[in-house]
Image: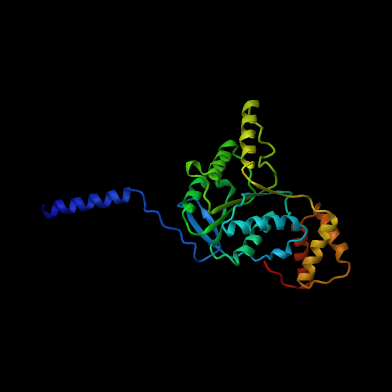
Length: 279
């Protein structure tokens, strides 16, 4: 074979390599505990540790205990259930999921959390396949999940949780937060025929049944709201005359009482007093 033919064959081989599928890059989960999943190229972007201590979440002691027990079982390789945290906005659902994870991960170095965007539910089945044979154990968190796209997204999530013929990955725990128990947007039936709406609703409700653990977050009453304010104030050394009255006026201006509103009041109070708070 002459040099000219050899050079031509080399160029053809290189062109074919460029056209072929890229060799998948093995994900590295060693330098962080929290990650965000980017479906474009299945990249895992490391995120800083979540800093809110679990004991600062007050008024949800029952929810904390149930979620922690299930998460601890999963971390130890014991039977556990996918969890749906549902209820009113601002109740601390996402904060509880992340703070509880940090508490359990402190003594389980192989435990990782991957946050996925609610608009990327269709990417969950291939994501679960990537994680399936890893030595780590993964909590996959989807915040504010609802099926705005209807049955297609519901089917993708159901496929991920059931795992197809291979079954669900033993090392993946899926946790979702939602304002609605059955994950459906309130206007899910608009623009659909009666039969189509009924079929889509059935598909969407059937997905919520795949969560073995449902944890509800009801609206916060006045006593629980003030308990949260007082706990935050004591934790950060914030003192002011008429703390409760001031906190109640803040809630009235917001038109609601919740853990989030309590924290926002504390941030306003700390700013007024010139005290720094954790971000």
